Image (cartoon, rainbow, N blue to C red; front, side):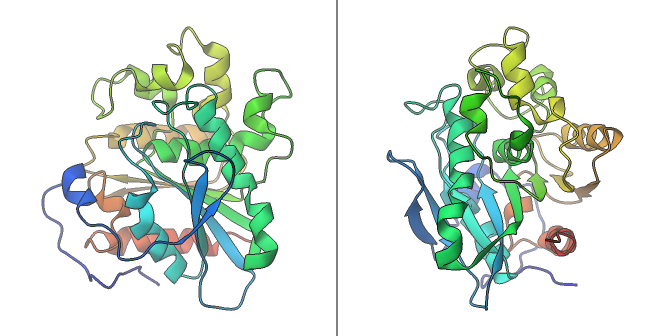
Length: 295
């Protein structure tokens, strides 16, 4: 059983880590920055294992309540750990809902285009596009799940900007502390995002934007048809564990193969912190899941 670790080693679980504490721990290295489109936020960071290819690919999507309070920097720790385990990683940046052009459907369209750009990178970097998983944290978990549903979006005027011409298939999803059910998250009063986050993402409240909700909400698009690993920290106060469990059970009931893991002693950020002691559990479960992704 492989457990991810970093040069910083493991630290013991204590109180749940805050965003301010987490963001102080900047990674020592960054990936190779490559543009996937036009505009200042149309880029990603590619990391390729120092091993013979072709390499399976994990597309890493950061969170931040779909807002520019966070960027791909904070998931660099996670991307480094996945690359050390033998997976190429494509950590994507995109316009958020408070960036110019990030309003509906900009954020969703951007992550779709960033995913599809793997076709342009595959030959040069030895990427195996028959083994692509999305890995998302928090609101990035929503986007990671949504990307798996994208090839099945209807061919309608509203859906075409989201779907694109030829959506790249996804073969599995690792949803970490994910906002997985937009309606449920919007109704909850116990989450750590601004109350208007889902409304701002959709450009209107879920009840006012039923068509957009049906296109953008993973829970409304079940079954996704790919294996899913739903990870949540038992101490998470940003995306409550009950939200993750409810989505996982709903996805199972719809026929998807879903593993649900609640990590004791972990909060919202420990689940993406490879140096933290709880990563022994988180990393081992991610390893098991990735081994099951077959071409």
